[in-house]
Image (cartoon, rainbow, N blue to C red; front, side, top):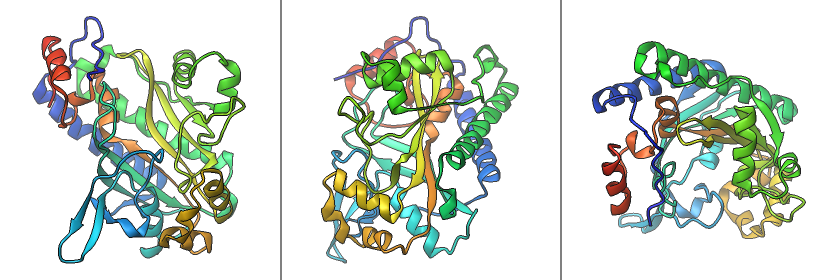
Length: 337
């Protein structure tokens, strides 16, 4: 069922040709700025992984993976949903040192995604991961990295306004980040749903990093579900911007300091996922064989959509949409790629 929303009076800022030029420009500018800020180096990433490795991410834990059998190996593979665990293992295998990191252009299929203005079954993002020290596993270090990412976003946005004067009518996003925990957000708005709380806060405060997502709050529920085996739920969060076109809070990145052996042990128990302890990745992590890291994913189509003021993610990526969505967008003059 279509969940598309058409903002009143919406007209794309750029025509189709200029949109394609702008998408390429955003991706080049932001990747270069991000790499310089965080000392990242590009690596090649898999499109699919063997199911038995435990390296594919489970997201909230309920999404069905796209899987298929490989004739010549006799094994089953899964199309990636994200690369949080794979990146951590890659850092060890590539022998990255403390302070250095990797990024990759990650393409995924999330077949159970609910389709709307912001969500597609096709996911493209910059997946990045960086080796840190044990003593870097703290909130101050997390905040510094968040500020670096937001600064890269805002620098890219300013460049786009200079290169494409048609975008100048859109307000620039603030690089000043407001930090708040999911429990503090609940305390502020106890009668609102999780999404309503985000909308209310980000509308008032602008660019926000919402911290500590995954564990239960005082209302007995997590702010949002998170898999137990990549982010440390006490040292993670979402980067949120205010989307002026859609008038809502807009998640650009989910990220965090990754689980230590101790926090993985705790979170597997809390999530009732103890069977994962026998998977190769989880065994290595519990045995202290993998480096301490911080990482996340930054949506490529999400960033393009935000900086171009697009009303629908289909304006900046080619995917599959239901007939009702295509009909509504066509009637509103919104071209879907």
